[in-house]
Picture 1 (cartoon, rainbow, N blue to C red):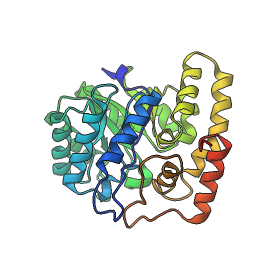
Picture 2: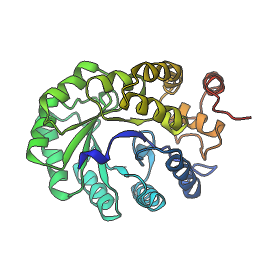
Picture 3: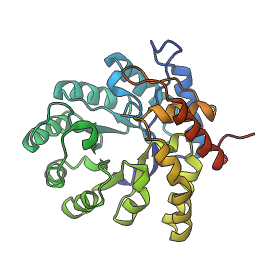
Length: 298
């Protein structure tokens, strides 16, 4: 089951109309088509990079539906379906399954700060409601709550379709503990572009990536070099990409990547409030890194 969810998996941006009042569905389709054609190994709609927190419930469902339709089975769709409300997460998860998503990405509930026992209950209710694979999402910088590896292990042992974790703490020791404490077939998926290569070295099978929206070919080249045992080439590409990875987070994600997407000709827009358009110095930095990597074209 887990072998389908490996490699370079962009966390898709959500382009909006000019007044930010609606999702630009045509632009979303164009972006997905472009990334699939570039050779990515999967896509994640309606995650943190996709501004799930400011999508209406109807928009969130529609983004998943549009992406599933546009992908048309070419690569796996891992639908962002988390919430700080268990009931809302249940509704989004069952909808994602109904419209044909291949898996769901289920974030640790944010703001509420549940104990680990609350996380077990939350994810158990989701696991009992759907049959498609579930990838847990540990991102304590956004949730103020950490998924402990022991908790993930308990869930994976109870539910065979809890297949992995998107580990976005950026902490290599935490990543290693997921590998050590979870079942052998449990997937460690990196959630922080800057540490993707180090995560590969401790057992990660891929990355759910911000940078892959705008540099999919380079990300794929690095991953394929690693997979073939060409560690020197993988390291070289990693260090070439590292300043761009860092540029993607000089302001809150997805502010920089949406600016970058517009620069490379993808459908984009400013983020919705309370986020805002990138500062001029951010745009200058992003443009400089895109130029350095030859991503702006002629």
